[in-house]
Image 1 (cartoon, rainbow, N blue to C red):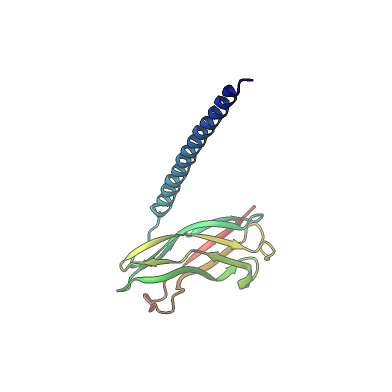
Image 2 (tube, rainbow, N blue to C red; image 1 turned 60 degrees about the vertical axis):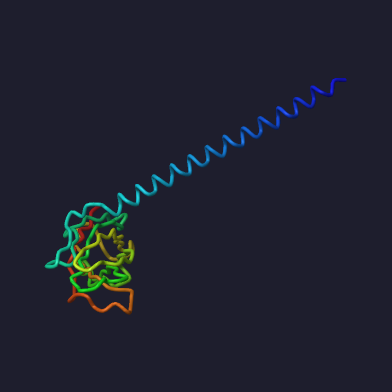
Length: 177
């Protein structure tokens, strides 16, 4: 019997296994780096998005005035911006929606919602928000109805002083098919 041939086969198998593990490790590191770079680019693209209607000191909240919403899927993403006219940074600022009035029926607070992330706004500047507006599908709204809502900025930080005087604006939602 030739035991030397069996030993060489075993050493070759170990060398091939080590090379395969190194190549696999390099491949995983490459793909991980590729994904982290693309995630950074995605975050940068979202945060540096151009706001079509930026907020100003004269108009501290700016948003689309008219938004079309589907009756079958009454959820919409809208872009808006909030300007801080105060003398200090505004912390934990979110945007809320209230006083929605429909042309076809009365709406309660449970029939609609607006969700934004909270952000800090440096003094004398604005930040953009992507807000999710949702109307309850079981609400008494039908195709062709017009809903007018007040949107306003609020703070989640109890230590932040009021940094403006009632910043609000209205948005009109039209219910489509």
